[in-house]
Image (cartoon, rainbow, N blue to C red):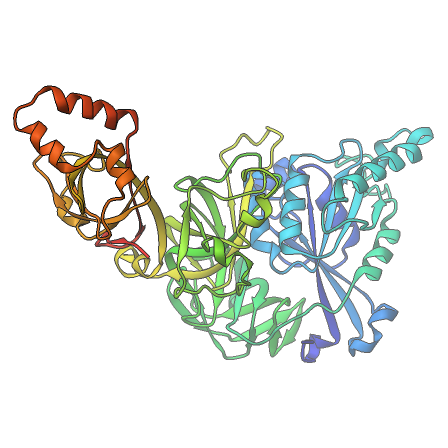
Length: 574
């Protein structure tokens, strides 16, 4: 859906995420490309200026005439909003926060270093959040002039190889020097390759799918007051639309405010929609309370303690994903610690197609000790056994506020930043959230995830033609009453049911409705008469019999399923 035309509406806004490893020169590239600096732009953090490193999503923009291939859209100008994402590994959550609105990703690579840890992580985030990418090889001025082209060609080939198995295979790769001579060089040094990059960006621009429907949600990246006006919050609309005089909520502070005025890049507007970069002015609100965060339609966000997500493992993550493990969970604009439990549909359903954006509580799911991957399943038949879809239950250490269907990323951010490994472990979409603090009583019992239980014991002796006495299936202290009526199977083929306990030591009686087969009785030492005779006082006979039973024990198997969140812990047999 195209944006409705407003005063600023003749301009098509196109968000380009500038991602890359720390010090690859992203900010100087954004600076070289940009003319209008929006308020949040270019390392406004004092801490960031000192280190020359971007610490927040910086936004800046420049406008170009509308390229020919977009002339049918009705717009007059194309505005590129550059979202300069931090390259610090510890700031990965900021990138994920901005990734939902990025229309094109610009991956900046230091040509002298090639792919680095964070460039790989950016690639992963790009694959999750974005469909189009251009690669910029920066700092070509550092290459000796006589070998420059060879080095660029070599790095271009290397990058093509890296991208081969990603959705960005074959994407354009261009080389530039955004700040020749480095950060200390005088401003007179002119950048190289920037106008070519500008043309490339224009050729890659398209009309992004924008949806004005649904609740309004804006990611605020900057908040400041203007004397006599009020407080201005600038940010990018992640979903929905907003108009003058609308009420908006700041969920983190539980307050609602009326939109007094709005601006898009210094132009007053009356409405704005998803993907737009916007300043909203409200009154009587202290900007110090909200440096960054979310603003939304009142009551449209939920604060949740646990969630069910659809889940996919990130292939570059080296470890396995285990149930009960803890991960850093990034959802909406927050990152919290959370514990996971993986589950999927039981095997016969594997061919069924599941709706990806809603979760069916009516179905039964099978508990998994971890995320199942091809490498983890045995042998070539692995594919049929692989579940088509896997889900995870996330239990957060502290509640998070986010919209429904948020992008969720699980990572191990405590891994050493300097170790060359991808710390992003899995990603998914938030399908259901538990808003109740007592979710373990109100929400979890609705989730029908079961574990199959197999217990095995042995026949101790025949009781009569229609029953046997068993042992080793239960511990001495187990209340066998709970198991009465459950079906069991003998390894010789007979089916029976547990009738009750026998004596005090955990033994039990099994009723065999169709009677024991003669061969079973033979294995178990013949008829029960012999047994009773033996037990009357003939101490020699039972030993012999016991030996016989020991040499070929008859096993009793009890199989049942138990729902993980059933408060009664009932045992169920199909």
